[in-house]
Image (tube, rainbow, N blue to C red; front, side, top):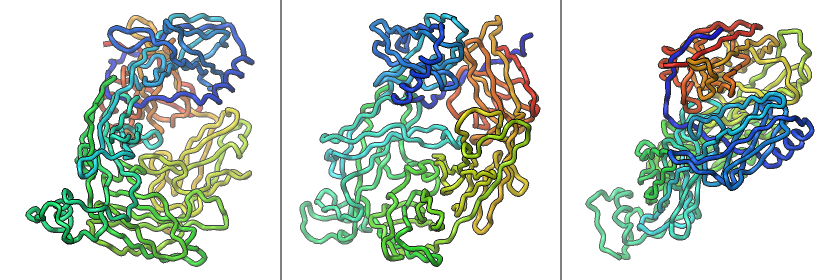
Length: 596
């Protein structure tokens, strides 16, 4: 019996590329594959992407089982062919890589998309699979200083608008970087289609250095110092310049030449595009000295406290850790520290004891202050205080054998980058199933977890604090308000599966399947009630552990990684979807047909 026919929707925004396996890990999988053995075979070829494809020779091709226990590697021959033999039955992910090219998973509808699993029966031979591989795009240009001269050693970052993997928030992620050569030239390659901004940062100049002033910089420095557009000075004049004794430095600059992200040019790259004219000019700006005076609870030594300054406001939200102006520095023996050479902008000064320090005898303290820097020296006061304790316990609702507590660990993630354990150390379970995060900095966090060791029947069901399930929202940590979590696992998770076919009844593995709740209040970044599934070559698809409730199921030909969390995307897809009810402990089968 076939499922309902749903209209397919094709979207065209580029997604994130996949990465190749670690060679050492691959060697281990090769050994495991040899021990398992089998009589199956998969052969095929790697061709270039485009209207007139040609074979890709010496491409690295990897084959990994869906459970990641079996895998091995080969290289294409001069005709672009590859072959894997002695394979056990199972489902496999197939991918080709080559320097200068984008990783190419089998079944990806376009570069940068997820691939399709290959289903292989016992002793089955699958021939003539085709992997399409495309060259990556290129961004290149020249970095110059304020005189227009090449600036060797400048660091250039290419940032891509994408959805952060852990948080589902649309942000800027680091795509690649390069260092300008002796001509000030840089070249960054292997970029997938998408939207980018380019950032240049000076290197080799201390933030507190006073850059020598030359005649061609006089006019600009006079304006920065408050001389106004009418201020003048004779070329080559050696007389003192008002404000020239103040520190000036190079500020990071977005292409084409602004320190503000809002004024950066967005560069749209297609497939195998080359933009060779993305030049950047670093400008001198008058910097400020920000002196911070701290107070702290008894027992905290200043040597244990680190300080950094990061951009705040909309730019800071998009840049995340890329907006850090200076790395962590220790205070030393005094409770006063001066941040030299801070460029103009909106910043947050953050101070804390080492967030990854696992010394149970040393409690963590934190403090922060917002500051607007406009070239004038400032003095800021920050009162350090202890963080908030987030503790919890684990319950198991079911009859299956309990897992080893040492194999479970929780994490708190925060921000667009989704840094693990952003809240500090902790998260390990003791023998009684209890865990704790001591001294968490106030903020909003997502609770995540990992399970090590052999697979078990247990899946996370809820995580409640004060009657709210924080798996569906965020954990709101506030000063002076400890949090107690109750995390419940179940051995009766929901299961959803089926087959995706076209109107003629053939498997339709080229599609993306999106399963998402009908409750629009849960259409949020990284929602656990929204999932993307790729069907295998036989059209089969499955997912386990969605919370019970009513869901939409939709299929489409293309979707950017993480775009399925966007409410506007889901609203459009809901109109072409079918509904299904998932119940705890039950397996729901929903076959689908796609057509126009």
